[in-house]
Image 1 (cartoon, rainbow, N blue to C red):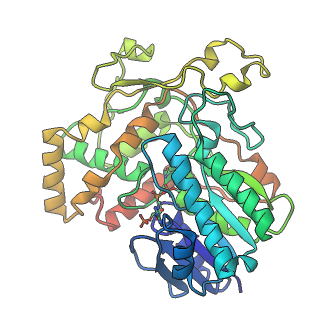
Image 2 (cartoon, rainbow, N blue to C red):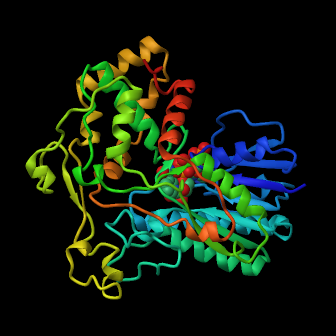
Image 3 (tube, rainbow, N blue to C red):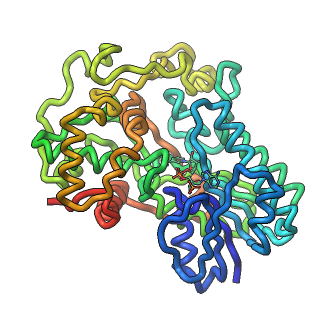
Length: 412
Ligand SMILES: NC(=O)c1ccc[n+]([C@@H]2O[C@H](COP(=O)([O-])OP(=O)(O)OC[C@H]3O[C@@H](n4cnc5c(N)ncnc54)[C@H](OP(=O)(O)O)[C@@H]3O)[C@@H](O)[C@H]2O)c1
C-alpha cells in the first residue's frame, strides 16, 4: 500500500488532502501530515509532524527522520508583501524540502510529487487574461511582469524530478472554497462573516464587489474536489498525467448574479432591488470613495496574447481594476461592525478571533475585479478525470461546516 506526505496540512487545500488520504486507509497505509502548527484531528493512518519549511535542508532532514513517503503533496504556502519575496520564500521552501529528502535518502522511494499552485499562473491577479485559460497558454514573459512564484516552484520541481528520479503533477486551482482557520486566502469564511454581521445589523445583503464582476463568469475550486483530484493524479500512471500541469476547478461556470440571491436566502436576507448607480455600472468610481479603486497592470495578461488572437489595441485587452462598492478592509474596522461581531461571538459561542483573522483584503480583491475568470477543464477530462462539483453547493456546504467549526453562527 502506498505511503504519502502532505506539506501545508493545516491549510485550506492541504487539510482536505490529508482527510481524503485518511478516509481511504485501504489504499494509503501511512500519511505524514506536516505543518508548523498543530490543528485538527487526523484519522488513524495519519501521523502529524511539526516541521518548519523555512529551516535548512539539514535541519529538516533531522525532523523528517525515517519518513519514507512515495507520494508527496506539496501545498505549503507563506504569503509575503511582495511578489519578489513570495518567489524567494516559497521557492526556497520547496527546494530545501526536496533537498532534505535527498539527505535522508527518502527521495529514492518517491514516485511522484504533486505540487499545488494556482490560477496566478495566468496572471489572474494582474488583470484580465485570455479566456478560458488553458494549461498550454504561454507563461507571462513580458519584461514589465512581476516575478511569479509558481514559475519558480515549477522550474524547481522539473529540475529536482529529473535529478532525483521521480515524476510530478502540478495543479492550478482558482479561488478555493473550503475550511481553514487564520489562513491567507479564504472566501467562505469572509463571505459568511460578512453575511452574519449584515443580518445582525438588520441590513439588506449589498453586493460589496464590482458591478462588472457581479455579472461576470467565474470558476471556483472546492477544496474537497481538489483533494480528490490530487489522489487521482497521484496514482494515474499514464503519460497524459505524468509530468503535467492541470487546471483544477469545479467544472461548472458560475456568476454572483446567480449565487448572491442564494446566499441571501441561506441567511434569510434580502438583496436590494437596485445595487448599482449609473456611474458604477459604467465603471466610474471615485478613487477615494467608499470602495477605493485599485488599478491593476497597465497591460493585462491578455495583452500578451492580443496580437496573435486578433485583439491588439482592442477594448478587451485594456487595463483592469479592482472597483469594489465596499472597501472590506474599512468595513471590517467599522465600530458598528465590530460591535455586531462581539455580540454574535458572545451570544452564539463563536471563536472570537475568526473575525480578526479573516482575510478581508482577499474578499475585497476577488469580488472587486472587473473581469471574467474562467479556466478550461478539457485537459484533465481528456486525461480521464471525471470529477465535478456544483459551485453553489460547495459554498453552501462549506458555510455549514464553518458553523460546526464555531466560525459562523447557525443559519436562521
Ligand atoms: N486559498 C485559495 O483561495 C487559493 C487559490 C488558488 C491557489 N492557491 C494556492 O494554493 C497553495 C496553497 O495555499 P493555501 O491557500 O492552501 O494556503 P493556506 O491555507 O494559507 O495554508 C498554508 C499552509 O502552509 C503551511 N506553512 C506555511 N508556512 C510554513 C512553514 N514555514 N513550514 C511549514 N509549513 C508552513 C501552513 O501551516 P502552519 O502555518 O501551521 O505552518 C498551512 O498548513 C498556494 O500556492 C496558493 O497560492 C490558493
